[in-house]
Length: 300
Image 1 (tube, rainbow, N blue to C red):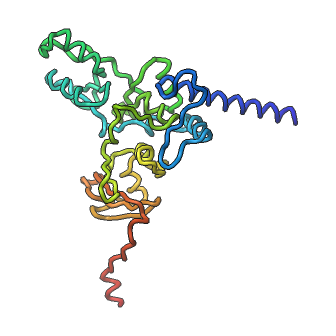
Image 2 (cartoon, helix red, strand yellow; image 1 turned 90 degrees about the horizontal axis):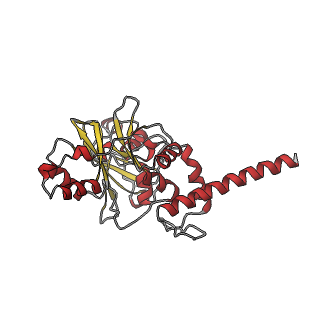
Image 3 (tube, rainbow, N blue to C red; image 1 turned 45 degrees about the horizontal axis):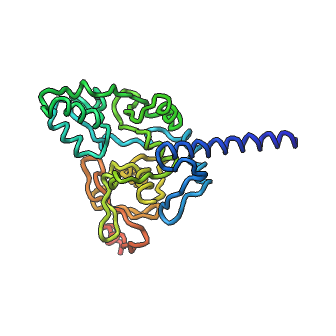
C-alpha cells in the first residue's frame, strides 16, 4: 500500500510539473515571459494576483471547456464582404485592430477565405496602389472550420500542430457560430494579455455613475475577464442568455432583476432578443417596493 501511494504521488507530481512547464512555454512564446526567466511574472487582475493554484486549475480546465465557450460570437465578429469593391475592403482592414478577418460571399455562412492585413498591404503595394489590379480573394488563406464542440485542449494542440492562429467555429449543421484564435486559448491559461494594440471590450461601456452598459451578445467569459466579475457561464454563453435563464422568461424593457450580486436592467429588447442591459453592483441599489396589483388593492 505504501508503494502504491508513492507511485500515485509521483504521477500527480509529474502531471503538475508538466502543466506548469506548458504554461511557462506558452507564456514565453507569446512574449509574456522573457527568455531565461524562471517564473512567470503575474500581472494584477482585479484586486490581486493569480496564484499558481489558479494557473494549474485553468490549465486542466482546457479539457472541460469547448471553443464555443471562448469564441468571438458571429454577431461580434468583424468580417469582410468579398463582393465589395477592393478599396472598401482595404479601408475596413485598416480601420480594424484585427490582423486576420474572414471573407464571405453572399452570406456570413459562406466564408470563402481569411484575409491577413499584411498580405493585403503587400498586394496593394505590388499593384502600385491601384485597387482595380488586385483580387483580394486570390490572396485570402483557405478558411479552417472547426466544430463548436471541440475542447480547448484539442484546439490548442491543433493550432500548435498546424502552426495556425485562426479558425472558424461552426455548429453541427455547418453554420458559422463565430471564430476562435490561439490568443483566446492562451488567455484562458495565462489570463488577459494586454498590449499596445488592445482596445476596450466591444459592446461594453462603463458609465460615469459606475454602471456598465452591455450588449446582450457579449460572452459572459469575456465580461468576467475584462471586469473581474464572477458570473456563472454553465447555463448560458452570453449575458442576455444568463438573464433569460435566471428570469425563466424573455423580459420586457425596463424590467430589473437582482442575482449573482448584480442588478440587471433591460434597456432595449429587439423582438425576442435582449439587445442591451445596464448592470451595477446590487449593493448600490436600494430595493424598490413591488408594484401593487389590482387584486391586492381590491383585497385591502
